[in-house]
Image (cartoon, rainbow, N blue to C red):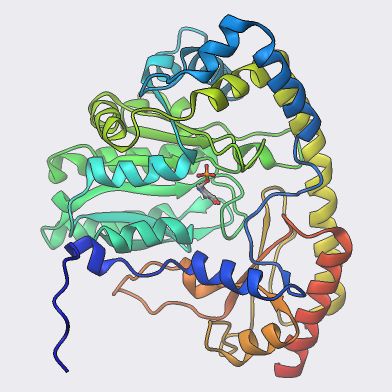
Length: 425
Ligand SMILES: Cc1ncc(COP(=O)(O)O)c(C=O)c1O
């Protein structure tokens, strides 16, 4: 059959429908479905009262309201940048004068998702290589696919990226003469999506050391893109320092953060701290995308940070999520077959479960279909693996989210899933 001529660009033709679309479609088309798949945050703890107050304050004075209701700059509101940088510096325990946290290195974006996309535009041409954790954030893998990039998976363990495996991949790229195509390593460093693992500070420093070692052979810097989307969702107050705190490392670090998960996904404001050449390019690209993130929402967030409402909200969130994670863990312990391997969550929104090998969890598997028939949805683990020709994608894992569901829904969802698993083990 002759194909109809298409006016689509190479990217337009190449882009596959993102898995998030059919996961959302399934959720919306089945009202009785319990979704343990969605990466949504908890509805009940959304900052409704706080936001109402902030909006009222924002509109109280006419000049203040006018400033917020006008276009802002491409880079983002100076107050929000100053406050966010001070907040990050504080989290990292860095000195006030530390240039790694300077507000003029920060760009405010439409969610951190926009930053991730623009970074691939600023740094990568089709055929270029990025290194990702194996497994990684599946929406980022969608960008990689759409933009025609090549991804290589790096093994991870309970402390994050496996440095020996990273070096093995770097050596192999060098031996193949492909190192000049490698642009960055992407790490979801806190309570990782999908596994819940947090990368230790030593591993971040080790990664930067290795990237430095190979940059001469690459002929350009190889950046570490640290995606800290879940940083503030830890259940304890213990925080791991970001890679910006690695001494003499920050000129190779791109730090991506967001107010989505810790405050409100509906506000959808993110930010990045970027080294000079990348900063200039991303700022130019953002100018073409939208010449600035919603000014009103930026003013609102600046107020939330300045008034202390933001930190107060975070403290409440920790209790909510710690409880929901506990409910999910208890349900798994009671309902899942003993052969399933998993770890209780210490933060974030996810538990990663490994089924016995040979028990498939993919979209076409018996398990997935039976779970759907039981009206319960999970994210098949295989979606979280890059298309890396060096290995077969594992297909016996699942990502379970305790973000959206209520306690009883989480328990019921896990019970149904446990029943399905037991029938198949
Ligand atoms: C690891 C990770 N990074 C980035 C994002 C994007 O979040 P946002 O664009 O809302 O900041 C998400 C959302 O789920 C995520 O899980």
